[in-house]
Image 1: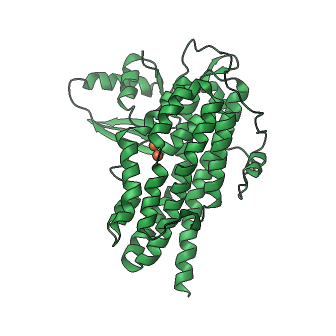
Image 2: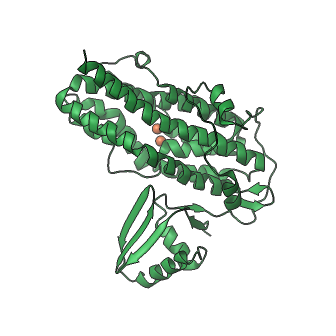
Image 3: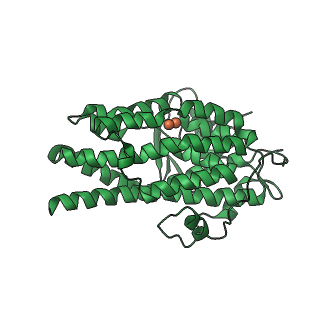
Length: 362
Ligand SMILES: [Fe+2]
Ligand SMILES: [Fe+2]
C-alpha cells in the first residue's frame, strides 16, 4: 500500500468551472478537469477541502500530484522503535542556534529557532516519543521551500544582472560566473568525503549511500571543466563564500551525528523539482564561451535523467523510527543547513553588487 499523504500547511485548493488550482507559497499547479476520472477528482477535492485527507479519492488526488512538492507523508502505522544501529559520536549541543553556528564558523547570527518543533512532533508521531522519519523528512522539504521563497528575489536578481553583464561587460560576467560555479564545485567536491563519513556512521543507510556515491562521483570534475573554459584552471584560486563553507560543515556534522538531518540535506542538494533547463547554463551558452555552460548543463541532465530529487524518499524510508532526541537534533541541524543555503544566495548577490560597483567607480 502507498504511504498516505497530507497537504502541506497553508495549501489552497480551488475549483472554478473546469479549472483547478492547487497552490503553496512555492508552487502553483493549474490543471483542467476533464476525462473519465473527472468525478473521482472532484470527489477527492471535496474531501480535501473538508479536511478528510485520508479518504480514498483524496489520497488518489494527492498521489496524482506526487511529482511536485505538494504534500508530505502521514506517519506510518506500526512503525516500531528499533534499537538504533548507528555508531554515533557525542552529538553537538543544540539548545541554541549560536552554539552550532560557532562550531562551524558561520559568520552570521541566528538568535532563535525558526521552525515549530511541536508541530513537527505532532504530525510525525507514531507512538509516545516515537516519530516517523519519512513524515519528518517530507515535511521539512516544505519548510525548506518556504525559506527559499524568501530568497527567490536574490536568485532572480542574480539572473537579471548576469543577463545585463552578458550584453555590456562579458569579462565581468565570466569572473562572477566563475565565483558561482566555484560554490557548486565546493559543494560537489565535499559531498563524496561526507558520504563516506555517513556510510561509516549509519549502517542502516549503507546500501543507499553506496548507490548514491556511485551516482555523485566526478561531479566536481564537471565544474572544473566549466571553470577551465573560463580560464580558471585552479578552482582553489576562487573564494568559497563563508555561507557555502558553513553549509558543508553543517552537512558534515549531520553525516556524523544525525541520519535525519543528513537525509534532509540530500533532499536539499538534489532539489524538489526540475525546470526545463538550468538557467545559468542557458545564459552561459549565449556568451562567447558557450563551453562554460558544460558543467551545469551536464549536472542538470544527470540529476533529472536519474530523478535524483526522489532519492531523499528512499533514504528516509530506510531510516529507523526516531526518538525525541534524534528528532530534535535532526530538525535543528537541518534548519541551520537550509538557512546557510539561503544566506549563500544573499552572499552571492552581494558579491556581484560589490564587483559591479567597483568596476563602475574605477
Ligand atoms: Fe551531483
Ligand atoms: Fe545528484
